[in-house]
Amino acid sequence: MGQRQRPLRSAEWFGTADKNGFMYRSWMKNQGIPDHEFQGKPIIGICNTWSELTPCNAHFRKLAEHVKQGVLEAGGYPVEFPVFSNGESNLRPTAMFTRNLASMDVEEAIRGNPIDAVVLLVGCDKTTPALLMGAASCDIPTIVVTGGPMLNGKHKGKDIGSGTVVWKLSEQVKAGEISLHDFMAAEAGMSRSAGTCNTMGTASTMACMAESLGTSLPHNAAIPAVDSRRYVLAHLSGNRIVEMVDEDLRLSKILTKEAFDNAIRTNAAIGGSTNAVIHLKAIAGRIGVDLTLDDWSRVGRGTPTVVDLQPSGRFLMEEFYYAGGLPAVLKRLGEADRLPFKDALTVNGKTIWENVKDAPLYNDEVIRPLDN
Image 1 (tube, rainbow, N blue to C red):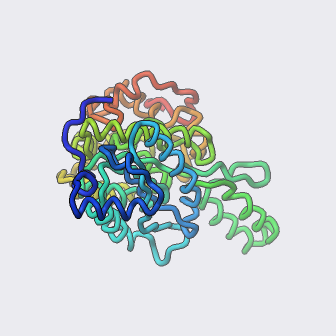
Image 2: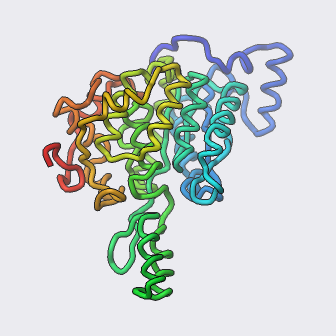
Image 3: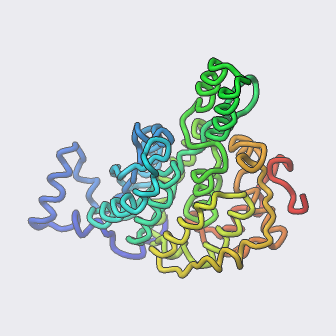
């Protein structure tokens, strides 16, 4: 653990032997927290978008426990708090209406509470930009942990993507080409594990954006939600956020104009959602980076789409992870001199190129060569 670069923010609450310190500590102690936890340990907030109304994020209680283990192991003290969870699948008329509400919730929760750093538990579409926007406005050490995509849907022995198959099957029922029983069987097989959509929709796109911006550990974007490696990543993120406090590695050092250029290029290569344009502009605005629509044209134009995923391609997020995930894409871009800023800093303290230059790539069908 490195030398701490500046006083702990939480010490303004817990670090004094006067009336205020007495009150802050005493009320927290009603949870059974011993006094030594308040003696100079970094207080790590775990910002949780868990909700049973957000099915993509319904497994986050377990995810948070693994983050806590990592924080405790590294010598920090974790405190979990809820924020507005805007799930795309249930929320009418659209979760986009509440993205900024959620970001304000996150900002005020961080700004008003005694935390030195924050782990953002994100998954469903708007939760990723909303939490990054709120944290960016506060500019404290921050790390993103995504809940991960669900397993491939299965119907009649074939893979089906979440959300993509329903349109086709609905028309087939109306035309009498398949029975209502077949239709309902597909419904039962489409969403068969915890996690976000397994296509390259907004959830997977924004998970890739978070990783290409440098705000998460490598492989965060694609590990399936129910893969044990997802929980290992959560634990390691808990370890790392404590070190980030000591290094004073805040979001403003990660979310640079160079990082956004890398993300734009990555979005083109993965065939990402057009919603990324709206969300990256909003995150950039919160951190004070001038990102324009012209930047999307300047950086993105001419970049081949190399990831063959539904809805525009054939495969799903499970295959994407097994093929090498986002590090393999970034390596392929970098080797072709298509990663604009290889020396952009990431949350693990290394540059993005250091993280991916040796990344394995296992499947050239899922992650194509640039000339194919």
